Amino acid sequence: MTSVRIPIVQKILSANDQMAAQNRQLFSDKGIFTINIMASPGAGKTSVILQTIKALSGKLRLAVIEGDTAPVTIDADKISMAGVPAIQINTGGDCHLDAAMVSDAMKAMQLDDFDLVIIENVGNLVCPASFDLGQHANVLIASVPEGDDKPYKYPAIYRGLHALILNKTDLLPYIPFKADYFFAGVDALNPDLAKFPMSCMSGEGVDAWVEWITAQVKKHQAG
Amino acid sequence: MTSVRIPIVQKILSANDQMAAQNRQLFSDKGIFTINIMASPGAGKTSVILQTIKALSGKLRLAVIEGDTAPVTIDADKISMAGVPAIQINTGGDCHLDAAMVSDAMKAMQLDDFDLVIIENVGNLVCPASFDLGQHANVLIASVPEGDDKPYKYPAIYRGLHALILNKTDLLPYIPFKADYFFAGVDALNPDLAKFPMSCMSGEGVDAWVEWITAQVKKHQAG
Image 1: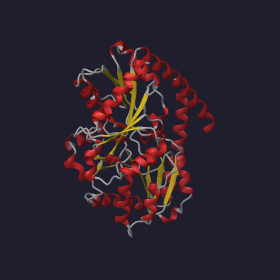
Image 2: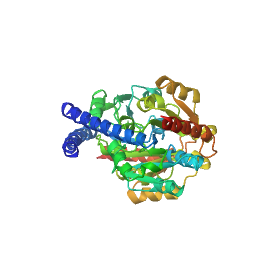
Image 3: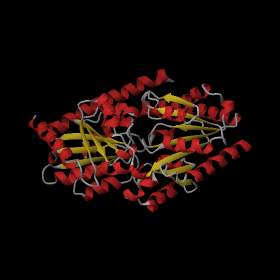
Image 4: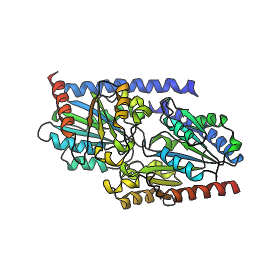
């Protein structure tokens, strides 16, 4: 089986990379900085995005591309209600977004209207790591209840990151989580990562994250 | 791309189904009941397995097949230290176990020695749902911090389940989680499911789960 399968997968990845490069160029031509947010299911991707929308309101023009495996608009509705355009992609059961899906979403957007596009990938710590979408930065949201051993168990996704949010720090008093062990695992894989402990319940860490993302957008737009 | 890709994927699934059927037959011939435990990363698969091992000690003979995407033995070590044989499968970055991997693990086991084999799948709420391994029952571990909307967002994995554990109920006081909304979503997809709210911290719900799994083993062995 293997000898048949591998060439096909390589072709798909290569076609994906080409389309991702086109997406990235188009985003850049329009002065848009784009981030790909990845996480386990339930790590708090939508909550972090909602905090980001609130903090950037009136400062940067945002849109969100929302990836879901099923035709439910739970997250897209929350984004829309926060006053930001949300474009939903239903992957039809697929475990990750790909560049063609993002390209389709871009066609449904007025790209001249935005400074920052946030792509919320499907909740999954494995597959999204292998598919370039045309983003400028990869962001992972880990969360305290997932446990401190995740960098050791899912190393691939940590390697390609530009920023890491450790969400749900408000739960630290109730959960055995060794932050030193967690961050030692992260640093071994990706020492130059920007790291943001955060709680969307208390608001802790949101300012530092928003400062970072704003600086990235400004740097990108300054060329 | 699609017209090239689909036939290949079908062939792989069909070969997987054939091997899964062989695995299931061999497990049954040896009087072994086998469960496939699936979950998000960090939902508590290993913690539930450790509680199960403790409760079944001296009552049923257990082995654990441990799926990981990376060559780390964190979970397998915990199982071994609990006194139960652990066979680790490193998927080499793949997002799910398949029947061939389980078949390889079975060759490394003395199958006459066991009543119950627990397969701990890779942490992922999407991909493992599509691959039969040769198990007799599928079990999902959801957890309170993941949020109450997961059945709506990841419906495929809920449809094929025989039992559902809702883990980390000890965190309910600290997290907005509407149990009614969660279980309404579960019931709409899979009304006949056995459901076990559980806390591996307090031990709540472990007895009911262990009673259920023991009954399944006895029923299977009675033929």
